[in-house]
Length: 172
Image 1: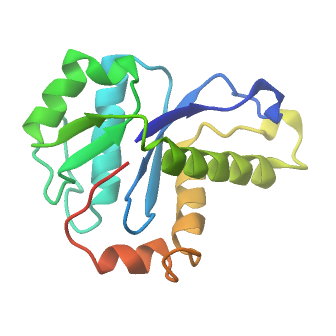
Image 2: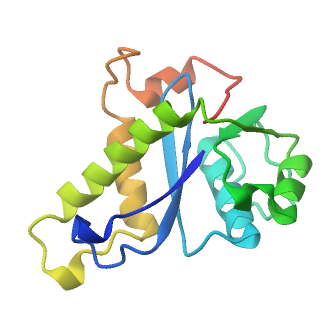
Protein backbone atom coordinates (compact mmCIF):
# COMPACT_ATOMS: atom_id res chain seq x y z
CA UNK A 1 0.00 0.00 0.00
CA UNK A 2 1.21 3.46 -0.73
CA UNK A 3 0.02 7.05 -1.01
CA UNK A 4 0.65 9.28 -3.96
CA UNK A 5 0.09 12.84 -5.06
CA UNK A 6 0.12 14.21 -8.60
CA UNK A 7 2.98 16.47 -9.61
CA UNK A 8 2.14 20.17 -10.02
CA UNK A 9 3.57 20.01 -13.57
CA UNK A 10 1.27 17.12 -14.55
CA UNK A 11 -1.35 19.58 -15.79
CA UNK A 12 -4.16 18.22 -13.61
CA UNK A 13 -6.40 20.65 -11.77
CA UNK A 14 -6.36 19.10 -8.28
CA UNK A 15 -2.72 18.04 -8.14
CA UNK A 16 -2.37 18.67 -4.39
CA UNK A 17 -4.82 15.89 -3.41
CA UNK A 18 -3.77 12.33 -2.49
CA UNK A 19 -4.77 8.81 -3.40
CA UNK A 20 -4.11 5.53 -1.60
CA UNK A 21 -3.08 2.60 -3.77
CA UNK A 22 -3.19 -1.08 -2.77
CA UNK A 23 -1.60 -3.84 -4.90
CA UNK A 24 -2.01 -7.60 -4.57
CA UNK A 25 1.59 -8.85 -4.88
CA UNK A 26 0.71 -12.10 -6.65
CA UNK A 27 -1.89 -10.98 -9.18
CA UNK A 28 -0.91 -7.30 -9.52
CA UNK A 29 -4.60 -6.50 -8.93
CA UNK A 30 -4.68 -2.82 -8.02
CA UNK A 31 -7.27 -0.66 -6.30
CA UNK A 32 -7.06 3.04 -5.65
CA UNK A 33 -9.01 5.41 -3.39
CA UNK A 34 -8.91 9.23 -3.42
CA UNK A 35 -8.26 10.93 -0.08
CA UNK A 36 -8.00 14.62 0.76
CA UNK A 37 -5.20 14.37 3.29
CA UNK A 38 -3.00 12.04 5.30
CA UNK A 39 -4.59 12.08 8.74
CA UNK A 40 -5.17 8.83 10.58
CA UNK A 41 -8.95 9.17 10.28
CA UNK A 42 -8.78 9.82 6.52
CA UNK A 43 -6.48 6.83 6.03
CA UNK A 44 -8.71 4.62 8.17
CA UNK A 45 -11.65 5.36 5.85
CA UNK A 46 -9.49 4.92 2.73
CA UNK A 47 -8.05 1.58 3.91
CA UNK A 48 -11.55 0.30 4.70
CA UNK A 49 -12.66 1.24 1.18
CA UNK A 50 -9.55 -0.36 -0.36
CA UNK A 51 -10.09 -3.60 1.56
CA UNK A 52 -13.71 -3.67 0.43
CA UNK A 53 -12.62 -3.15 -3.19
CA UNK A 54 -10.10 -5.97 -2.88
CA UNK A 55 -12.85 -8.30 -1.67
CA UNK A 56 -15.23 -8.38 -4.62
CA UNK A 57 -17.46 -11.23 -3.43
CA UNK A 58 -18.75 -9.72 -0.20
CA UNK A 59 -18.79 -6.69 2.06
CA UNK A 60 -21.00 -4.41 0.00
CA UNK A 61 -22.45 -2.88 3.19
CA UNK A 62 -19.44 -2.20 5.37
CA UNK A 63 -18.66 0.30 8.04
CA UNK A 64 -15.45 1.02 9.88
CA UNK A 65 -16.56 -1.51 12.54
CA UNK A 66 -17.49 -4.32 10.15
CA UNK A 67 -15.03 -7.20 9.98
CA UNK A 68 -14.19 -7.62 6.31
CA UNK A 69 -13.87 -11.23 5.14
CA UNK A 70 -10.93 -12.53 3.07
CA UNK A 71 -8.55 -9.77 4.10
CA UNK A 72 -4.85 -10.02 3.36
CA UNK A 73 -2.76 -11.24 6.27
CA UNK A 74 -0.19 -8.48 5.84
CA UNK A 75 -0.19 -5.03 4.28
CA UNK A 76 3.27 -3.76 3.41
CA UNK A 77 3.99 -0.07 3.21
CA UNK A 78 6.83 2.38 3.56
CA UNK A 79 7.48 4.34 6.72
CA UNK A 80 4.44 6.62 6.22
CA UNK A 81 3.83 8.24 9.65
CA UNK A 82 0.04 8.39 9.15
CA UNK A 83 -0.08 4.59 9.02
CA UNK A 84 1.24 4.49 12.59
CA UNK A 85 -1.67 6.51 13.99
CA UNK A 86 -4.21 5.07 16.45
CA UNK A 87 -7.17 5.03 13.98
CA UNK A 88 -5.20 3.00 11.42
CA UNK A 89 -3.74 0.66 14.05
CA UNK A 90 -7.24 0.09 15.49
CA UNK A 91 -8.68 -0.72 12.07
CA UNK A 92 -5.91 -3.17 11.20
CA UNK A 93 -6.19 -4.86 14.58
CA UNK A 94 -9.98 -5.27 14.17
CA UNK A 95 -9.42 -6.72 10.70
CA UNK A 96 -6.61 -9.05 11.92
CA UNK A 97 -4.07 -7.52 9.52
CA UNK A 98 -0.40 -7.06 10.28
CA UNK A 99 1.27 -3.88 9.01
CA UNK A 100 4.74 -4.48 7.61
CA UNK A 101 6.70 -1.23 7.47
CA UNK A 102 9.51 -1.75 5.00
CA UNK A 103 11.24 -0.06 2.12
CA UNK A 104 11.56 -3.27 0.09
CA UNK A 105 8.00 -2.98 -1.21
CA UNK A 106 8.93 0.31 -2.83
CA UNK A 107 9.84 -1.04 -6.29
CA UNK A 108 6.47 -2.74 -6.83
CA UNK A 109 4.47 0.15 -5.40
CA UNK A 110 6.49 2.76 -7.27
CA UNK A 111 5.89 0.98 -10.61
CA UNK A 112 2.15 0.89 -9.94
CA UNK A 113 2.10 4.55 -8.94
CA UNK A 114 4.05 5.56 -12.06
CA UNK A 115 1.66 3.51 -14.20
CA UNK A 116 -1.38 5.10 -12.59
CA UNK A 117 0.00 8.62 -12.84
CA UNK A 118 0.77 8.03 -16.53
CA UNK A 119 -2.75 6.65 -17.10
CA UNK A 120 -4.24 9.70 -15.33
CA UNK A 121 -2.27 12.21 -17.37
CA UNK A 122 -2.87 10.34 -20.66
CA UNK A 123 -6.61 10.10 -20.11
CA UNK A 124 -6.90 13.82 -19.28
CA UNK A 125 -4.67 15.00 -22.12
CA UNK A 126 -6.47 17.31 -24.53
CA UNK A 127 -9.18 18.32 -22.08
CA UNK A 128 -9.57 21.96 -21.04
CA UNK A 129 -7.73 22.79 -17.79
CA UNK A 130 -10.96 23.06 -15.78
CA UNK A 131 -11.88 19.47 -16.75
CA UNK A 132 -8.52 17.91 -15.79
CA UNK A 133 -9.78 16.55 -12.46
CA UNK A 134 -8.18 13.27 -11.39
CA UNK A 135 -9.19 13.14 -7.72
CA UNK A 136 -12.54 11.46 -8.32
CA UNK A 137 -13.57 7.96 -7.22
CA UNK A 138 -15.42 7.12 -10.46
CA UNK A 139 -12.51 8.26 -12.63
CA UNK A 140 -9.96 6.28 -10.58
CA UNK A 141 -12.24 3.20 -10.58
CA UNK A 142 -12.39 3.27 -14.39
CA UNK A 143 -8.60 3.45 -14.57
CA UNK A 144 -8.32 0.55 -12.11
CA UNK A 145 -10.70 -1.50 -14.24
CA UNK A 146 -8.67 -0.75 -17.36
CA UNK A 147 -5.42 -1.74 -15.66
CA UNK A 148 -6.85 -4.85 -14.00
CA UNK A 149 -8.25 -6.18 -17.28
CA UNK A 150 -5.05 -5.86 -19.34
CA UNK A 151 -2.64 -8.79 -19.58
CA UNK A 152 0.37 -8.37 -17.31
CA UNK A 153 3.79 -9.27 -18.69
CA UNK A 154 5.04 -11.05 -15.54
CA UNK A 155 2.00 -13.28 -14.96
CA UNK A 156 0.77 -13.77 -18.55
CA UNK A 157 -2.75 -13.07 -17.25
CA UNK A 158 -4.85 -10.08 -16.43
CA UNK A 159 -4.80 -9.18 -12.73
CA UNK A 160 -8.49 -10.19 -12.58
CA UNK A 161 -7.66 -13.68 -13.91
CA UNK A 162 -4.61 -14.06 -11.67
CA UNK A 163 -6.42 -13.13 -8.48
CA UNK A 164 -9.07 -15.77 -9.13
CA UNK A 165 -6.28 -18.36 -8.91
CA UNK A 166 -5.20 -17.38 -5.42
CA UNK A 167 -7.15 -17.09 -2.19
CA UNK A 168 -4.61 -15.96 0.41
CA UNK A 169 -3.03 -12.67 -0.58
CA UNK A 170 -0.30 -10.42 0.65
CA UNK A 171 -0.85 -6.81 -0.32
CA UNK A 172 1.71 -4.10 -1.01
